[in-house]
Image (cartoon, rainbow, N blue to C red; front, top):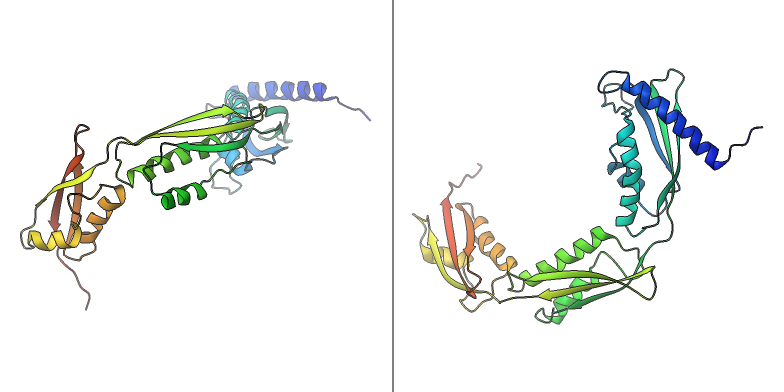
Length: 286
């Protein structure tokens, strides 16, 4: 029995890959060697299906009339680097491709690709800190922090960090701070395998509702529209939720739809709200 050491196996796979790329380049432009299977070994910490969607090399459909994907050497080489980037974004900076196998079928018109991955140890979240969020009511702030998609002790996932950033910005906007900014910083924890996430808020000026202008209504009086959607007083803080509620107050009717838009300058803390209504004929079924 012949035993191949890892280095010899990798060299053999590279030789097969070189021959495969030469055969593919000699065929028609879109290639003629179909990717029959793309398989991963060693994937435990991430979703294998999501990893496949991040790569340019894809499996051909098993359905006869389904889409076929052909092997391309340059795309496959780039995909090996994409695997490392995919893992790094999800908290595994030491992940690497430890080997790959390229297997042609007997007809040499289909190929199976097997990629072996060494995931390494993750960088875990040691703490998540929020500063500058005192303008948010404590109950609402607690509800936001309890609903964070990333928890302490989990691998630091950059996509989830971005999600937390968006949640923090939206929470400030929902409490009357339309120009709020939130900065995100990642620092090392007690060791290089830990990360501390800091989210610092700059709420900016609070905005209040100013005079309300209503236009486009011909058969419904301003008073009716005001009662339905514009109940906020000038002292009420503007929030994304309140603007949605204003519009929903009238769009729920069967008579007309509405559009709301707000204009404000950064130097002013009061917004003039324009409420334009569009008549819509009510249709009822017998």
